[in-house]
Length: 288
Image (cartoon, rainbow, N blue to C red; front, side):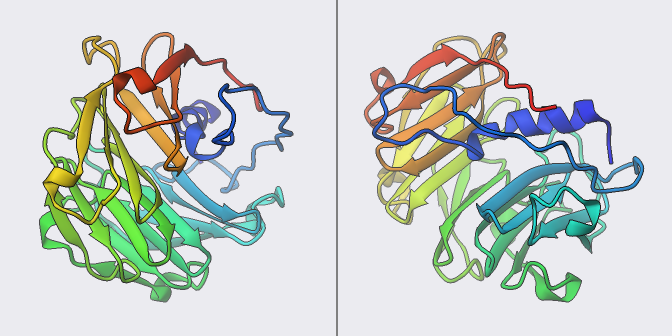
């Protein structure tokens, strides 16, 4: 596996997907969490095999994807076991990583559905499995003509609804277990450097973090007009850009940026306009 520095960078970038305070709380407080020691999935560093994104619908199942190649999905029925043997690596594609595109993405609403994507122009791939721990034969590649470069972000709050974004700023939705997808051009949400990112609490609410803007919808499967965009920060994108968002409900979202210092933005009314979002400097959490 890659060095601890690389893994820490990926973990920080997606930390907001792992813990979000309850919607009823007006403040973000430091949780009393106990962190295990890092688990090295491979016995020694192997070029290209770098887990970059993870989805854990329960304490007894997690799935992750790699950053470079070969396109690998890691699954575990015992993610807290602390042993490399608790993780299974399944190679689903040998497509090439392309600089300038986001790392691999994955979303699993349950152990009975995972959706993964490996972006790249002409080499992107979207893979779906109803049995993620069953090996390569249980993963199928879904042909999505309008998303030949893969997805930059995926959010599946349930097995009957998924939403995803491509690098051109289009929203893709599926209501049949990620087998077929519909596309809606939303506008300028492609981001200037990274992302965009999407998080959906249900079929009736999704939020997108892109550049210095938040775009929300209470009808994600609707037309372009169903989406509303607000500018949260007026800083130049070279100084500020969202790199993650998580919305456990329609009344609470949290997002992080890549600013120096980085900030955590929260809102109890994500679609309520720029004034509904407040930012505070993030405090690093040492886990190893």
